[in-house]
Length: 246
Image (tube, rainbow, N blue to C red):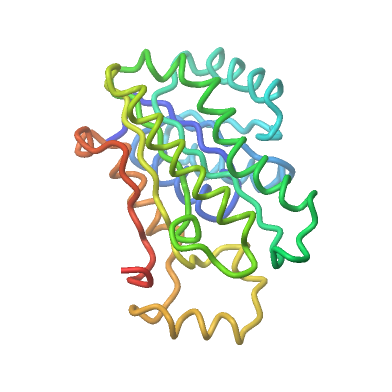
């Protein structure tokens, strides 16, 4: 499905990013895994990806750093020779009510979740625009659509990512590059595993399908959006939340 293509996945060492990287690799894409701190986890993903017979490399990068991102993107292009797909998945949370949220916590989440996506889009676009079938997939959140108590910073970053998606779709369409966003609900990842059991049960009760989603289910949607089958879809935000905000 993706044979001969090269994909860059930010936040690719765990959770949704890991699932996306492995799904793309299984379907023939070469993979550049972007990670922030856990090199062992990133190398594990690379090894898993390589087991499918493709080329994979890990790159450490602070996605919020414009200059560092530029250097890493140039290095990826030099080592792979082409870039067709970008998945902006890197994200963090620093939850708190707006009345007590620290400025640093607001800035950190915006810088990683939103500016990080801008940085990679900005620096990789020059390469992706040369691809005959370029794809940009941004991992947003239902929190960016509906908001969420205690997540003013996270919700704002993910809502901003939707705006960035729609603008990118319009700007890059003339070069046959599509840009879409996925808005997951509650997914079984490290980010949600730290939630108290009571909250997890409340979440499952609130979701019509009565369960949390799996990273592999989000990866399957990303795989579709990266494929030729999705060539006429751009500027869209697709929810994957078990019906929570249907």
